[in-house]
Amino acid sequence: MYFALILVAFVASSMVDATPLNIRSPFRHRKVSKRDDSQKFVVAHHMVGNTYPYTQDDWTSDIQAAHAAGIDGFALNIGSDDWQPTQVASAYQAAAASGTDFKLFISFDMSVLPCSSPDDAAALRNYITTYAQHPNQLQVNNRAFASTFAGESCSFGQGSVPQGWSSQFTQHPDLSGANAVHFVPSFFVDPATFGQYNGAMHGAFNFNSGWPIQLTADTGNSVLGPLGTNLASSASQAIGTITQALSQFVGATDTDTQYVNGLKSVTTDDGAPTYMGAVSPWFFTHYGADSYNKNFIYYADSHLYPTRWESIIDNRDMFDMVEIVTWNDFGESHYIGPIHGAQPNSQDWVDGFDHTAWLDMTSYYATAYKTGSYPQITEDKLYMWARPHTKDANAPDPVGKPDNYELDQDVLWAVVFATANSTVTLYTSDSTSQTFNVNAGVNKISTDLTPGGYMRGTIVRNDQTIVDFRPDGYNFTSNPQAYNYNAFAAVSPSSAPASN
Ligand SMILES: *[C@@H]1O[C@H](CO)[C@@H](O)[C@H](O)[C@H]1NC(C)=O
Ligand SMILES: *[C@@H]1O[C@H](CO)[C@@H](O)[C@H](O)[C@H]1NC(C)=O
Image (tube, rainbow, N blue to C red):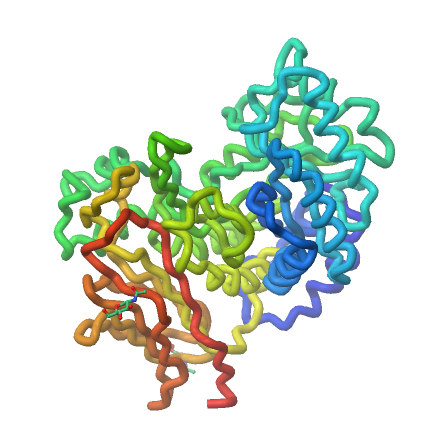
C-alpha cells in the first residue's frame, strides 16, 4: 500500500510517549519494503443489519466511542434490506459531523446479497460511486476502500468468479478515476489460489483469522492426547494443563502467513496488495433448527483478544490493516461495542452481557499496532471476563449445547494493567481466591471459577488497596435455564495511582 501521509505518520509516531519497547520498532529495523512505512488502520466490522432503529445520534455515539478507543473507521457490513442504504447515508453524515476524521467503507455481505447478474453488480457499484468522494470514505492508494464478507461464488453472470468481480466491479468503467476502488474482499478460498483473482482484487481480508477455528472438539481431543480422551469429562485439576495445550492455537499467525504468501502472486495496478487481518474477542451463536440453525462456539479462552493483538503487534509488518470482528454482531457474541440498536433474536444470550471492557482495552493495542510502541500505562485497571455457567451444565434448552463447547474451561480470565509492581487477588466466591504478583505493565492471569460464586479482583500495592472490583450482574451457576456460552466482561473504574 502507498499512502500520502507517510511523513505525518512518522512525525506522529516519534512523539508517542512510550515505555521501553518490548516489540520491534519499525524505525529501528527498517526494511526496504514500502509496507513498513505505511499508515496502519484499525477498523471495526459494523453490522448495518442491526441498526434498523438507529438515528444519526446513535451513529454519532458509536463513532465517538470507537474513535476514543483508537479505532479509525467502520467496515459497514451491508445486506439486502431496503432500509439499509438510508442507514449507510446516516453513518456517513454522522462521521462528517463528528469532527473526528473517522473513516467508513462498505463491506458487502455476499452471504445475503445477490450476485448472479450484471444488475446485481450495478447495485454494489452504486454504493461505491455514492461515497467514493465523501470526505469520510476510507481511501487506500488514493482509491475508495471496499471489502466483503464472502463473495467467492459470485460471477455476476460472467464466465468465472474472477471475471465477474473484475469486469462488473473492480475494473468496471463506473469505478474509474475519482471513483476507483481498492478492493480487499474476504473470499473464503485457499490463499494459494489468490493469483487467479488478478485484476479482481487488490488484497485480501482474512475474516476468520481472529479465532483458532481449526480447533474443534475433535481436533482438541487429538491435541490433548491422553489428557483429553474426552474433553467433556476432564477432571478439574487438569484444567490448567488443558488450557495450556489449547493456548498454543491462540494468537497463532499461520493463516496470516498463508494469506501474505498467497498475495505475492497477486499483481495490482495501484501498489502492493493489502493484507487485512482480524482480531476478535469471542464467538458463540445459538440458533435452533427452526431459525438460522447455527449453534456453535469457536475457542476464545486463553485471553484470546489481548493475545491475538500481541501477535499482530509482534508481526506488525505483515498486517497492513486490522479489522476488529466485530463492533455489534450480537448474534455471534463477538461485539465490543455497547448493546444497542436491533438484535437478530439474540437477546437471550446477549442482554446483560456487556463487552465494552474489551473496547476499553482496545485503545492500548490499537495504539501499539499503529505506532509501533506500546503506550505507557497511566492507570491501574483490572479487566475480567467469564461465561455464566459451568460448561458441562444441563439446561432445559431445546436448542441444545453448542458444537465445540467441550473446549471451554470454567475459568475466570483477567488482565491487569499495572502502573507498578502489585499484588492481585482474584476471588470466585467468598472462600475461593488466588493471589498473583504482577509487574508493571500488562499481566494476563486466570483462576478457576466456582459454581454459585462470582468474580471479584483486588490490586494491592504497598499495603494500599488500589482497586477492589466486583461487577454487578454476574454469577456463575451450574443450573442455567438456557445455554449461554457468551462472556460477561467488565473493567474496574479508572484508578489513577496519584489519587490513592
Ligand atoms: C518488579 O518485580 C520484578 C520481578 O517480578 C523485579 O525484577 C523488579 O525489580 C520490580 N520492580 C520494582 C520497581 O520493584
Ligand atoms: C446473583 O446471585 C445473587 C444471590 O443469589 C442474586 O441476588 C442476584 O440476583 C444474582 N444476579 C444475577 C445477575 O443473576
